[in-house]
Length: 381
Ligand SMILES: [Fe+2]
Image (cartoon, rainbow, N blue to C red; front, side, top):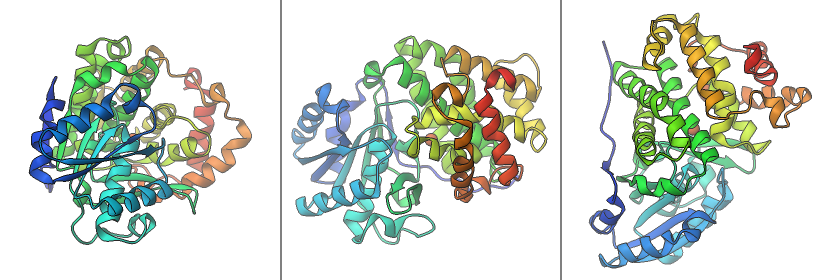
């Protein structure tokens, strides 16, 4: 057994934890930039509420509420200019993966100068960045504890990533009450993002006993709770918040593989939600990987609630969960045409950071086959 691991930042989890934000923030800075999306935070009164909580602890608060889904390098550049202009020393993210990833980018670019593109992988983050506090409003991305910020490079028209332990939020505040506003659809899609993180980390070439521990527990909780969470059960949503955090730990220690790599262009090119894109691809990548990691996937079947160790039972459980969670059967059900597969394969081949870590090697032919299967649908699995 051999591994390296570390503890990410502080976690404050539970109902009412949002109220601790003032205390947490005042330990890290005095001029906060609240980074959030364009609608959710304002609609439900969170911009005023969060600002007030921090102001009552003596912080000055400015707001950047211009983060779009799949945030771009342009948005992060704009947010960083604004942060510099305001002289901030702390970034507070409130939102899903998009807001948190944009906030991490702003914490880097505002502190170190230059443009967002200068810090995208394989470039490194050298120097001290502004501390980030992350408050997730979905149970899926795990970004509140990860070293990743996924940003769409507008020049290259592709999703790229800042990877650095320096951008792991210093504090993650997980208050499950914020999940009460989440639609059934978003609960389902973000849940599949979390499940993909867990399963991909588990399948990753560099998986360790530590990453497996988090991944297995996340899989177990998600299979037990996702359907109830979609129906609005707040207890199940709280469990999903926890599972998403665990899956975030798992990808910190291992990483994502071909599901994320193949799915990125379905989001940037076709507007599919990131979690939904992953849900479409996950069964076929798992199936493809069975010959390489049969034992492990057999073990995962038990975590998913199957009665015995068998990798095909895991696949069966996964398909059943997708059916129950309302994931459309195939890519053609959401408007993807068979003729789109050429460009999907071409774009996927550029995501070599994730595909190279898949436990079973895949080239153009194999990637095309996976897209074809996802196009035909789960009925034909
Ligand atoms: Fe993801």
